[in-house]
Image 1 (tube, rainbow, N blue to C red):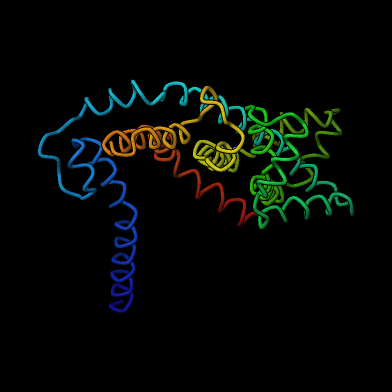
Image 2 (cartoon, helix red, strand yellow):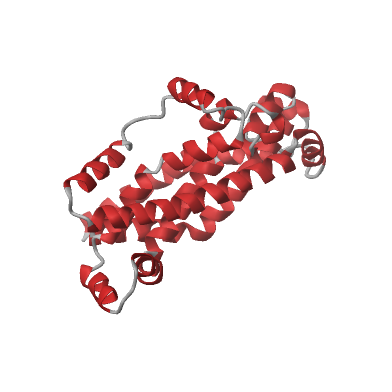
Length: 273
């Protein structure tokens, strides 16, 4: 019993130390967004002598184009997440239920994408050939095409659903579309919530794809507004920190509200699969 308590104390201490490694930079960004230009340039953890709670954020909003970036990020994120959920869930259902050589080959190819990074230069030339560069459509296509992890999640969860449910629905005269969307898809709620959260954070925070394929300021997402704003105000760190705080706030709120569903959805698929 003593050994177990000692082990738990050591583990909790290590976890607290790891949490500090993450929380200290977050605290520094937030606290420096309320300082003046001189104090923010020092980039320390001291509290500001004078709190500029509204001034920095007002100036940043006025010059940073953050509302346009927020609108673009919202449009891209919502559409991409919806497409990923629909396409990946239906693909995973078909690949899991059809035990053919062709379906297994497709499944292996999709899962193999987990270990292959996106090659920007060849992809850029392909999109340029298809006249998709400098357009939001290219971002839609490239983000949705990166569906390997979501398909992997859905496939592991669908394995736990008995095939007898499918057979009962077919006996009752249900079509394949009715079978999936009326019977199977509601059963996928835990893993669907997990997929929504993970993809929301990934798409919202995406920088690599957006910076190469959204070269117009009117199409900039929030991460790109931070990049662009830093280029124009590289000496105004208090404004840069304020931009970072507002850019990460939406995804932080979504994560804090739905974080319990991430572990439950992933473990359900792992255990049941």
